[in-house]
Image 1 (cartoon, rainbow, N blue to C red):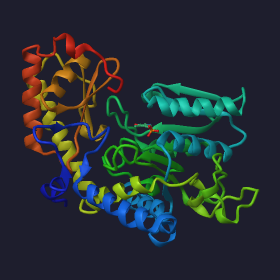
Image 2: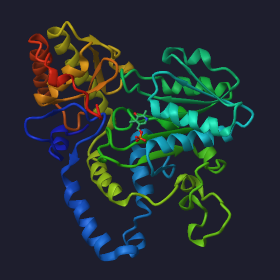
Image 3: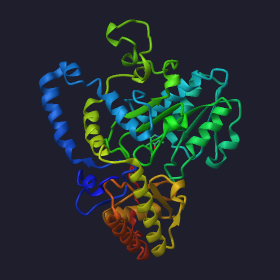
Image 4: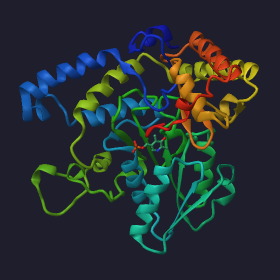
Length: 397
Ligand SMILES: *Cc1c(COP(=O)(O)O)cnc(C)c1O
């Protein structure tokens, strides 16, 4: 069980704001300001370069990897932090391809987040013309698992609609065809229980600034299954993934186990902020977070559908088929979201017409859901979105 009132009290939540965008960027853990400040003064300030050893900066990438690993069912010692998720996608797909050298196709779905597709496409172009990135509709993945495919690269939870793939079943079906799997957990880690070991997953990647609350620019994580980790040759063979970085050898030799998936210098300030977020996660059990999230999403759908006939549910109605977000379609979704943001209900907009709301039980409760639904009803019933200033697009939506 999780004491959600206690976890909520651990975050800075601005007055008058109902924050339904923790699926994009989690809020500030109250302890982060002090702890990052102290780290800067006591460690960066006083220790300078000796902090790498004295304060254990290098180890943070592994320790935090294991703390996230608990939420995603990874074997201890098989998750490491670093870089951005785009980079980790590249690294995982490149390593997976090398494990399946006779095949040249990466299969994904057209609901995947664009950067995953862009990174895979860029990688395949650099490998040669015989390589192919193939995308199919999300519901057609299983029937397209053919034996020319090297790697299946999927994001478990669709960023737009919240539709959830069956990771265990697709992994099993892919592996039966000799396909290596790469799972992106961007909208899974901290949103729902993931069981990487139990699913026999090959590779997984994800970010720590969404549901995990590590802050803007928090690093990504990568998981490699124990059966592969000593075989994979990282395409991004940076010095900190070397067997002996401080030998400064001219030849690359991959480090032991997951160490080889490091690239360069870890972002220590961000890792310190992430530690404070993971301290809150230590108070939570992910099964109760999932149960509460389904309750909150179901309540939100019921309230919005009862009062806003112009909004069409874009997410699966069955909570078990959905991640921790609810999306509605509306032709003027961008303007409607701006009107909501002006009234303190923060969600986001995803082109072409999706209004997206994330539900994060660590700091969102039933009263928040009811209050948000009432504001949405007011905006929709009174066409409060229909104003020119709400239709001007910002750079980040
Ligand atoms: C959020 C998200 C990303 C973001 O990648 P960054 O490199 O961290 O900017 C990538 N993939 C998916 C599936 C995402 O949801």
